[in-house]
Length: 116
Image (tube, rainbow, N blue to C red; front, side):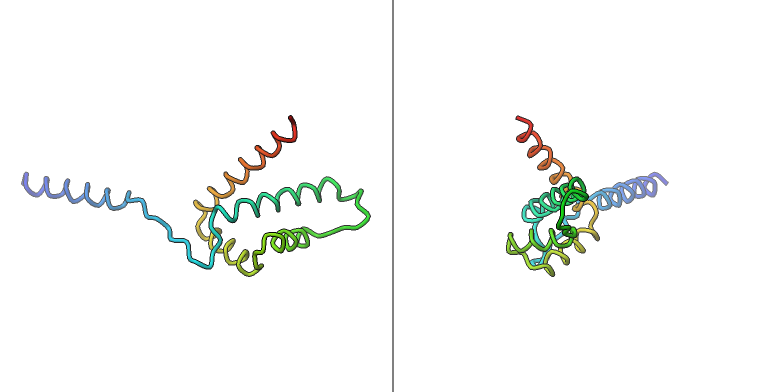
């Protein structure tokens, strides 16, 4: 009886270790890295905020999509690569959360520079 109980404990412990194993998500080559995506999303967030602030005072109104296209063009990123990257990260929310944490940090850093 002790052997069966000991075996059961070892089995449960082994399963627990395997379940807790940190599985690394492999980013496909056609997807932008986190390092590439953070500056793009930071600029898009700034454009979105600017558009919201100046929405009624601007005589020429640009859509957020216009800003996004301009930002991607400036950074030489094809739209389809950006879209597929966002789709990939949306399907991996823990990675997307890491990216947006870095975006928030970058926005805070830029705000701090402006307030000096």
